[in-house]
Image 1: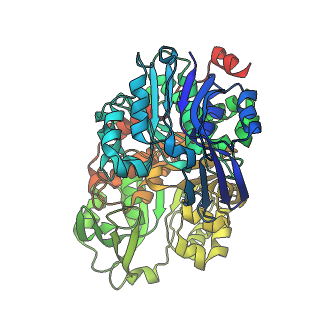
Image 2 (image 1 turned 120 degrees about the vertical axis):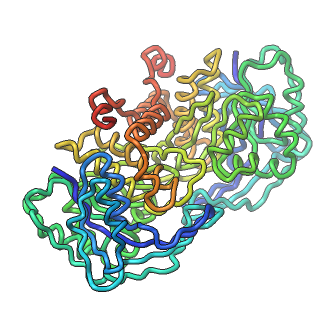
Image 3 (image 1 turned 30 degrees about the vertical axis):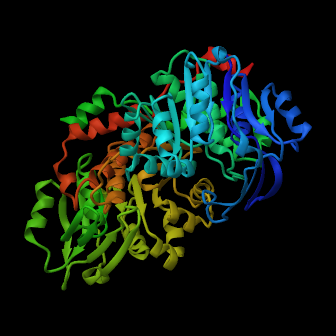
Length: 313
Length: 313
């Protein structure tokens, strides 16, 4: 009962106020799996080019991530380069996007019966639907991510997808775009009506809000004083959420909250280094420590009867 | 053992996407006291002009707010007008600031021995120091607010003030300016070193973060789907925090957290109407209901031994 992610594997060139890297291992499926694999054995399906380095393949295998679905296409691996602003790390400019083999990516699912937990990382929604149509019976847990580009160009496919999945991950602006609402609480309400069980609206350093079953959970971001590179934080967040939940049969009031906290924890590790350097080196003890830190940073006691009476009467 | 606030009483003209008001009752001491008075009887010291309306004086008295310290100066009452952007309610343009009697404000403290709880709302830091120097013995609880204008023009006075007070309320940008740090966690660390016990960094719709005694508390904002007017939200937040804490002899791990939640609750009422219309009409039951909503929106269970073991080994 492992976890399958379908997404991108890329070589990223990134410049941030802390420095830069050239052609380092990246992509949504990469960040996701290096995060989720701490909680649940993860397999990935993604397209790579003929130039994909053996040492990078080895890295996935060293960490026990299943790469049988890493399919080599003629041509070069997908490349992305971006620049983060020094006054605000949340501001990102994409410098170049070279789709390369990603243009031909056509994921094929084998042994669909064994797929119980699935994450559709950010790729063309038409492909995401094709993937879902190949899987029977429906996995017990399905999560999906997307981005503004697809909301603008393939909204109808996303509408259809949102009714087919359990957990929708969007950032604040994407949620507003997709719901055509200007307020995130109204956005979440509109998105939940499209049929997904859980909507998680990500707000970067401001944490995220989890909407589920008429309840709302404010999930804080783990405090990072010196973020190095925000690339992959969202995918690592989703990896923590999906990895943790893959261990359970249902989504419950308590486990979706814990899962989100683990999402925050994994996102915090992702931004502490370029590429997946930090994600691959952390220990389970460090993960649990950050979870407990966040528990302590939001818990407080209920109003007791005496206080309630005093305030009420 | 009441609570004293020293700040402004104003006539505000405000335009927001929801509408506009002309010359409505406002000012930091007004919003603060209509909020704090729900928790602790509040008195205010502020300057008004000869044009200040009797019906507005009566309104304070009707709600049991002490206005003996409302001193009439020759001239007109302080006036402010502002405009909130339709795409982002957090963006505010000040259109006019007519100081009028505020230019001559020179607060005089009587019966300083009886002042146990004090809030220095946003006024000239030189005046804030003059106030503190008139009070002996030191109140058991002192809170202070300021703004970018004073940080730019009277930083040295603020430095001195921060070592004299218990709780410092600043918004995110003000905290970064005052600490000369680009990250709010480093900002809070720097500000705490100046001598104040608690630093509360306000982030509008993203809630606030409370830094105290090496601990951190993420305090969420209460979700408001249709905010009408953000004016006074910060002062109402401070009113909830200071009002609640005025009932206790010390600041503790638990009561500073509960106080901040009450701050969020009171801020949420403030933005639901123009002026203090909503703050004056709410019941204690509505306050407690929102407190309990926020409790439910951030609590979750600790990791149990079984889970910790599974994740750790």
